[in-house]
Length: 408
Image 1 (cartoon, rainbow, N blue to C red):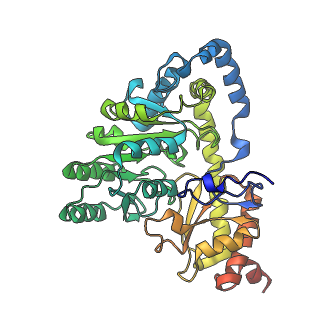
Image 2 (tube, one colour):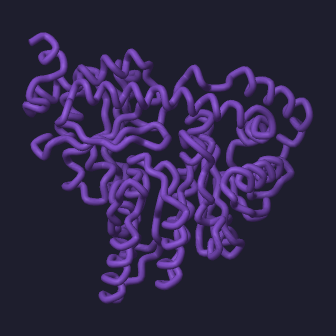
């Protein structure tokens, strides 16, 4: 018999986690990426070079760079944002974090109190919503179209909250390769977003962690890079453009904000080796790697869209993503994707039910998010066919599954 810790545990803990038993055969969940696209050889070379040159700085917390993160990495981020996102900042405007999730945690810790209200996107990153809920905040979802947040709807939301005497703490947006829809907000709409935020005297949180993975053309200017961008707190990440297990993200903000975040970042600093290797790699072959990764992901996205079209037919609706790693699918109202998640999971097909990625969980109950980045093209076709079979069995949707349709 092992010791029973149960009487000593906090009463408000979440449900216990299950032991990890490996990924399912058809894994369409999470933010995983293509394993063959990880630039292993270049990362090995970067690690060897930077450790030989600066390894002795590991003897100090912060690598002799202070609490905001490894200076060479912050300087590399400055160059990257200036070139790719039109965002001019200095190394002292950047705080390196352990992935973009820690960035969101720090932003919330500075701004959010129980009872506060935030404005988010109608289809939204699930991690942003769960964190707001945990802090006792509420949120209002702004409707989306193919170009991101609809500004007419956002204006109405802001006016409605003002009439109630509620000032939202911030507007949270993923403007470039939105999660889960894959849309990209045009510059004109970004300007209007800044105008509305200024008119109502509130800040914007710009989450740009997928922005490097846009299929065609350059990235639009970051909202923070536009006039009036001083009211924007910006966060980015290299987890999606290099590897999810590389837990390095960052915040760009003015000092009055960063100075309040630093006392809350009590982890002793984001992983030093990761920062050193990333800084070295960012100055080398990063751009060539991202260009190749975009091609790989675009091919897999096409395979996912073809598979969903073939297996579900007119029962599935989706827009064409402009980048990223997700396909956001709408099924008929009769389909409960939370129930589909359980049934499919029992047979080795993992999906993200739409209610977990929607500001209105009920409205998202017949939607699902499919990650196409990690599985092979063959696994995408096989897994979507299996998903259609299960959905047909559970809900009669599609009216005949793809396999039945081909046989009959």
